[in-house]
Image 1: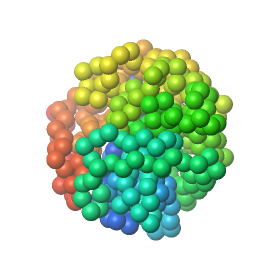
Image 2 (image 1 turned 180 degrees about the vertical axis):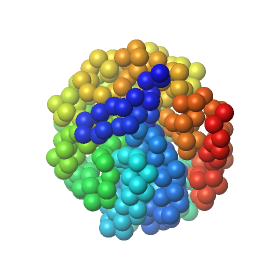
Image 3 (image 1 turned 45 degrees about the horizontal axis):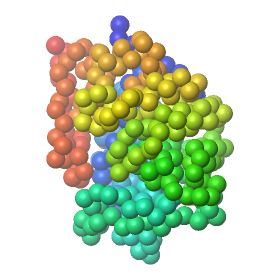
Length: 362
């Protein structure tokens, strides 16, 4: 039997199978960033996943940098998410929310008062531009955070965690991956600070660990996971020694007794794969809790990774996007719906809630 379909306990989370729905930004809220009826249906359709990790969800107005992504910093958003979590639970599923601060991957058009986005250092993202509410624009040079501002952002993560409990989530995932604020602090390509948050790997990991401590304190360790992307280049990211940087981070995270560590590191041949050696095997050795791997796995590769001890759970992104019943399709070896990439962020039901489920068992 494929090991993906066996139950697993990740901290305080009792999961019916080892298939995790990866966080997938879809841009389906309105400008108010309140989850809506369409999102309720989208997540309900995918409730057979052992665990759903929600799309990245901003923890404050300052954290924003993407059009029509959800938030978790006011009561209306809490109530919108409560409808989502209720629907997932009624369908027998579990769902946690991914907590997000975009840092430099933003623009004054998103920021309160048109302020510059914040980052560990004033280093602009090199890219072809950012889609803002008023059109596509160049990335600005962000403002380096003062050290005395950092505790306020840490407090925002803790408050979002408290709101996640109120919204009925089963836990939270701290988004430390994909070139956003925590990742920007971790990697020396984006962190040129000379204070206690920059320089050595100990200092660069400080923000991640302070956020994790605050989030665990706002709930409990068995309800908290962390996502990292040690070799990912998305968001114009780099590090001179990712093996050392992320092994240190993984070891330090052991102190919290987390539900899991989630590693986004695409397999060779995947469009998001990075050159050089994979870091995830080192993180498996360094981290003592459950490990999730993500990036190009199918049913057979996921089963093999678990069998070989490389991971305890496997996260699937695009396959879950296009196949609401992915677990059953993997179970019976059914063909998969192809994804429509033109509708990833287009808004509306097309390419979101209209992917067909299986109608008959072959």
